[in-house]
Length: 430
Image (cartoon, rainbow, N blue to C red):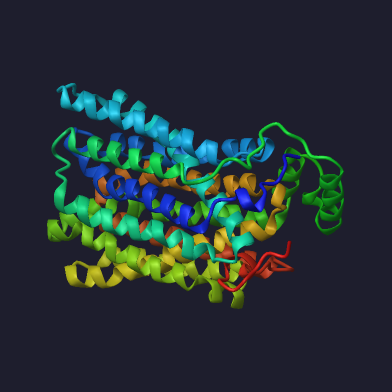
């Protein structure tokens, strides 16, 4: 196995928080404005859904691949840096072509979105792996590291909604390129000196593997063998299925929320504020997620999150009064924030440390598959029936995920607690 990264070479909590701040600023520009930018380029219905689906589609393929590479070669940070650089090049070229008046048709926009999505995946999945590993050694809750990404997203969503006009071809690509350049610079605050690609350890790792094998069959063997054993576990498969359904419902929000607000007469200048209100709830939950995950097992927390998501989408399909729509937005803390921290808590404790990146990649792939299916459906569904139909179907989908999660929680004989990593007061026993 690759050597573990020495403690003195592991990224500091401050460096991780700064990097989260940088990469979520990118999403703060992309998610609220990209659908409107595509629509201004003539992409509607299935065409818009296909282009938007490239992000979760690569979320289906890239995380397990990069996770396997990261675990097999013992690298994290170099993958992050390469991904940031590649994503920057994509949007820099797109901004240049738009500034020169080159109008891209569906094929060109699809390829550009696909390339960005390929690089975007390790930017985020590897950051979560680094953050979870750092939480175990530093005792700082994962949520308190990750919340800086949510803060950045909220600030950038407000700023981009107020300052950027998606109808102008070069504005969004230029803003994305600038944000990605900042994220690339911040990635160099994450030290990579302790990463030892291709190196194999000696007897000490063999002894550790033998001890791990006594605790769990998935803990023995190569990275591939461990991953296969994990996938054969009934509870982990149920977890992946529930994640698929829940994320397919959530993708309706990513693709159609801004369009829905516009179509029902929501003040255009407050669209970014609406996104930010939701993220504010997410920030609060992540800041205090440690005690929640110490008290309740992750499957139980996931079931509650999926139920909250179903309620949120049902309300969104029905409510038209714009102040009430703002009041609904804090439910984002439940439908996304609670779901995310509980999912990573479960993955961290269910998988051996030698395949943490691979296990998180499998979770990301399941969620990505749900988003792909969802976005291919929601764009056309919104075109036919608007937000009422779209979010109504999303509510039913999340409700099915809730039922599956309840079954999963009841069938889990020994529900792992997330407290050891996700609690502020926890410390890793070295």
